[in-house]
Length: 372
Image (cartoon, rainbow, N blue to C red; front, side, top):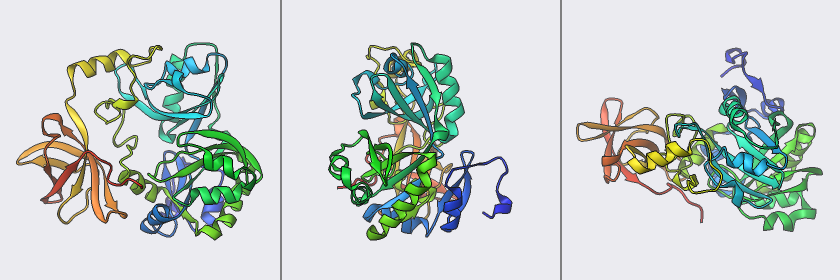
């Protein structure tokens, strides 16, 4: 897309000028101009699987709860049990409406007894904030701090090596940091929050960097990354990486008409936790009466490419629709996710309507790719 085609309604992420200088192909996404790709989706994808890649995901939003009831307040908003978190621990959860529909999927960080940070999807930032403000109960201040951070994600099997090079004085502490844990530390001379999280199916870290120091950290990361063949990565390969790992994407596998159980996120729903949460009664009812459809994965067995919106058939009966589909560069196969009517969800094979023909696909309940 050329600059002339870009919408004037899109916002800039703080480092947009650096991405343009590095030759990124930019695209509007969730209201922001974002890097779509640099060298190419396949090359960037394989760099993350085999080495290390750097993503700028500063379009993501952050909402912080500060005050004595911070933990209880977020616990009343999300499906998972925030009361079980310890300082420095992160938790994946759904934010639901009263009908049990998914408003967003979020990461909840307990930073202290009186301080919680929630990372939200860029496309849902306004909706999430309005929902939180309308339903938050207790003594804590709710702050939208999204514009205070640049969020960089270092992902891949060599992510830890790059981070240690950027933070030699805290190398041991970062290496010891467990998955879904976070700590404050000094990286490239700047104090920030670092979490061992990501969206690629690989080991990795996400750096919450104060905007004023972000460009210096970005440049230091590029310089240090030369020793590790660091690849700059865009949203294109982020999507193929998450699909191979079978991570849902809001707006495709989830929206406010989708509940966590059918989306394969029942493990995030703690119906018996002490704090009642928004949508709890509806989710109890959904669980009791049973599902009507289920999110399934499939691998194409013939020629073609699975794309969102394609219809799914068994015989002559339409039984579902594709929500995500792409070529999996690691697997060298066409893979996809989609909702299938529950009575057909355990079938070994389905047909996917690709243009004018139906191509067989094998159903699977497992991730397409899982790192060793």
